[in-house]
Amino acid sequence: MTDIKSMTQEELQRLLKDLGQPAFRARQVFRWLHRGVRSFDEMTDLSKALREKLGESCFITSPQVERRQESALDGTIKYLWRLMDGNCIETVLMRYHHGNTVCVSSQVGCRMGCAFCASTLGGKVRDLRPSEILDQVLFTQLDAGAPISNIVLMGIGEPLDNWDNVMRFLTLVNHPDGLNIGMRHISLSTCGLVNQIDKLADLGLQLTLSVSLHAPDDETRSRLMPVNRSVGVARLMESCRRYFQRTGRRISYEYAMIDGVNDTPEQADLLASLLKGMPGHVNLIPLNHVEESPLKPSRHVQEFQKRLERQGITVTVRRRLGSDIDASCGQLRRKAMGAPGGQ
Ligand code: SAH
View 1 (cartoon, rainbow, N blue to C red):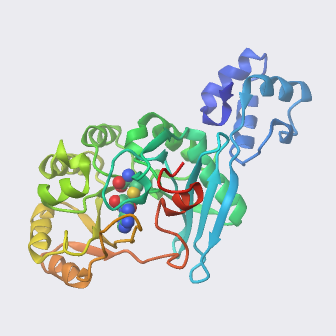
View 2 (cartoon, rainbow, N blue to C red; view 1 turned 30 degrees about the horizontal axis):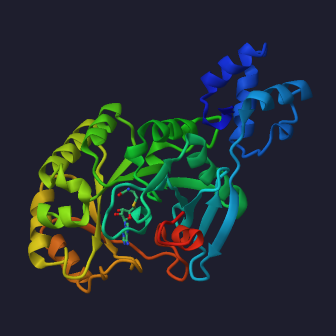
View 3 (cartoon, rainbow, N blue to C red; view 1 turned 180 degrees about the horizontal axis):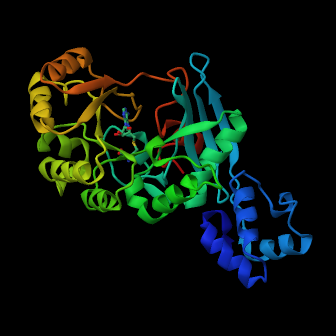
């Protein structure tokens, strides 16, 4: 069976041509899929015979709401979706002045092993299909009745570890006959897979790249993020520099502030020297406490911020949305699926 919503419009054209259909049918079917229909029967301008024919060789992914939590403070909604194979993933809808943003997952679980992150505790179960990443945007928009203008690939999983499916998702969500969300309205966050960052730079997309840095020195970063043990900070910064040179897009560096681990004045100075002359900005994130982890939120966020700013670095401190719900990533899924395996 073919996952029809993961197909590009050109691929649909070939499929429908093989079924003896004219070229314009592909556009019709593509539009229905990207409006979030859950069955071929909803495609009312296709003949019954064609709908049946499509149903014989193709399926339409259709996630169900397993849990939904809405913040009484700021309207943030966190969804736990149940996928067709029973796995669960999280999506968060955030309401900003500049528009509604969804934070989508790219994998079921994660294999990167970052010490502070709840999403990786049970390892990676599988990659998400392009359709399943798209569905998070489609069905959040439908369920919440909120038009989505921005997407961040910052949910469960490492997007660059699911390269083919994430690239295809970008093509789909960007399509004028689909959701038509521009690349400049999409951010992709990575723990720093340098080969893939280099590949992304060569594509020259107008995406915003967020790099989860979290420490300026190899010792601390390797302790927090196993990915750093084979490729250190210096090599990562090389890829970041190259990314900016190729795309002209400033990089956003994520930095989760952890008590006594990465929040010293020396580390602020080292971070500032690392970013000197590199257009970009630092986003300080107050650590979300994860039950299974001994790491605690830093008490020095403001000093750290000021010290960076004094050295000419642009810094923002992430506003905490949905702090009254389980909005920190990976925690809802773990609770619902029964920790420790998350499955
Ligand atoms: N794998 C990608 C995207 C998913 S994580 C990445 O590593 O960037 C999204 C962001 O949340 C990353 O910056 C990640 O480091 C951060 N994060 C994970 N757990 C966190 C926690 N407990 N507190 C604060 N930030 C966290």
